[in-house]
Length: 84
Image (cartoon, rainbow, N blue to C red):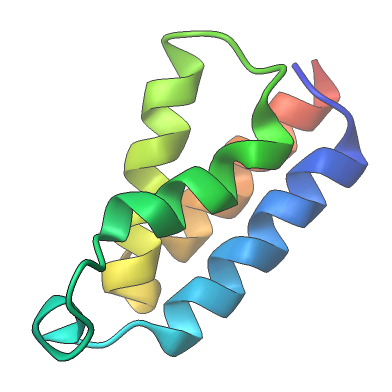
């Protein structure tokens, strides 16, 4: 349950992260972890409570790693979170 602007911001951040993510990034950029990207993407969703927060984090992770696999599920889930 969050404001639509927050879900749109989370989706925007996820898209930016997915576009800049690549296999082997942790090797190319020492100290990088996908968790820092996930934290950044999740920031606008601070009002979302567990277990929904965990579900969204998992969908965001999947979308970053393989956008074609998970993006539709993420968009649907964010729409539900904004409607509540």
